Length: 346
Image (tube, rainbow, N blue to C red; front, side):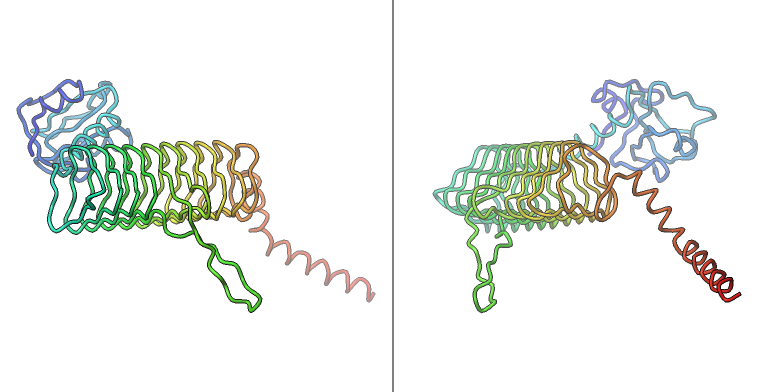
């Protein structure tokens, strides 16, 4: 689909500097811009690329003044905030690519289930008994929706995701490919013979509105009650959320984070990649956890934590500096010990 500079300026309430009729049909980074593509410049350190870019249209801040001649044929669209406007345009472009309402065949939807208007149901998707699907929901091919699942309006579920029975998905959620929501929590009890007996997991998972779950992440159902992901939470790819965990509003976690059972994560917490959080603890609102950190106990007030076990980041840096000096210190101690022995002999 093609858009002219004039149309783009209209969407973004911007001003065209150059040819308002020039058209683009794709997007590009400014340093990789080609004819027929749209790019943007928001960070001053990339300004040098605007003088050599091959892009046809570039979104820039209204404050931008070229330091030298721009490429011939480059049209600018000046806006208040280039980064925010490009993000808005990406969202608009993404919405244009969404599937139109349609039920592809073969697919299965139980007669006892209901769906609102605007449903897209991809081929080989399965919807079980008593499921309730909202309006404008997009369910891509090979998705499994179990019995009694509820899915809110405008939610998108990408190919190969599975939502087990009784789970609740809110409005405007995005669930990426390979996500498993509602698999059994890791519950086993050893018997007298030392064999592990499975503890039935009869709870569910609740995702509130505007939650996004990255590819191949897993959110386990509760043993009893619910595993709860609150409104606005963003979870990256390959994350593990165990049974009965609760994650507070607008918390974000990067790839390969693991959260053990019954942990309670506060609101607006940021968790770096590969961090591990032990079970049955509480993380205070607005805590930041650096990548690869381990959190074995509760965090009672907001802090930035690093290391395993996680400690205040400034304390960690000081400790790490001492750790790096440890071989030097040990050598010095050995030298002093040798000199002491020599003096003792004399």
